[in-house]
Amino acid sequence: MAIEVRIPTILRSYTGGAKVVEGTGDTLGDLLTDLDTRHAGLKARLVTDAGALHRFVNVYVNDEDVRFLGALDAKLNDGDSVTVLPAVAGGAFGFAAAAAISQHRAATAAVAARRAAVAAR
Amino acid sequence: MARYDSLLDACGGTPLVGLPRLSPTVPDGAPPVRLWAKLEDRNPTGSIKDRAALFMVRAAEQSGRLRPGDTILEPTSGNTGISLAMVAKLRGYRLVCVMPENVSTERVQLLRMYGAEIIFSPAAGGSNQAVATAKQIAVDHPDWVMLYQYGNEANARAHYETTGPELLHDLPTITHFVAGLGTTGTLMGTGRFLREKVEGIQVVAAEPRYGELVYGLRNIDEGYVPELYDASVLTRRFSVGTRDAVLRTRQLVEVEGIFAGFSTGAILHAALSVAHEAVRDGRRADVAFVVCDGGWKYLSTGAYGGTLADAESSLEGQLWA
Image (cartoon, rainbow over all chains, first blue to last red; front, top):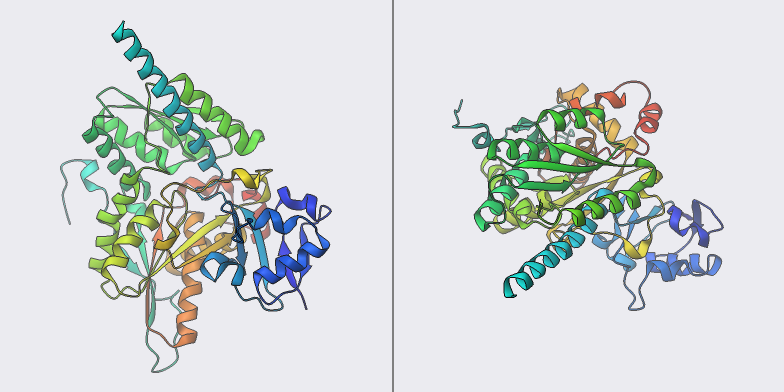
């Protein structure tokens, strides 16, 4: 029996469009190395050059976040289910709020700078 | 019974109720494992977000960022908007909410009733469109005040100063705290407080896992983690799918009579998971979890009745938590 891995839409270019692929490994790191032999490039999208999980990727083993189970050293067993998802804590709408606040800060700073320039004139 | 000077003063102080029927049965002689629900739907507008909204507005008033008559802008998919609308009304501010059009109709009606103005971002554009809409409005109105719940320390502080102490007072034997992971404010604030006071406390996050439509083609290089989030506060984090969340939401009302929204179902799923582990390990556990809001705002989804598969598909593409 193998380990089932669910791939998010954005990474299916590495799996020939497959939503679910299978692999083997005693740890998450081993599993990703195994997957990379058949889906070249996938591992590099999930793991940084420094050898840590990418900040904006969440990986779950049987619905539990691997960062709390040893990250890439998390132990796996046959029959486990692994899910890869983009990080969207805060719901997908967190993106919008974060983008808006950064633009807003810039716009507010620009207004303040203009007012200061007018005052200095 | 208690009396308060105004609705704002009635925020928090919610009941903690035991769940004798949903708590797992332990073998004879084994230590008890008990589930406790913190009923945050008993807040002024019916959700846990009242705590954060009140603290964020007060903090902005105290720092001078918010002055009488100002306009508050908040991108929100629901409960925070409703809470802010109520607080804004009572404190004399105008509130503009930016939200995707695929939120439940009840939320929109409630927001308008409380006096908020709404700008929709098209659901078809997914999160990219929501980002573009929110950015544009923020640029067009630099004079509006953004409280930004994802990065506002007063959001987490609300829970550090109120939710956490309430839980410890009502359940000094608490071993696990389980809550939803959205802005992360509830878990960060309550979690920090409990970690300081309760040795060995487990702080457990339940994160909603939406249908694929919601994640869309979001690039992994531009993901988003709220500024408030500090992973070191948590001990575990579960991802809960729509089906499990619906199943548990229904179970909560059927077995214990608590009518809650679907994010609560996701939280209960994680709470039951840690409770059953405690039973297996023969450990005592008092697991407190958050009931974020009541189910009223989600009735129009139809997901409280019919088959689980139908419920799952009716919530597909919706931000149900």
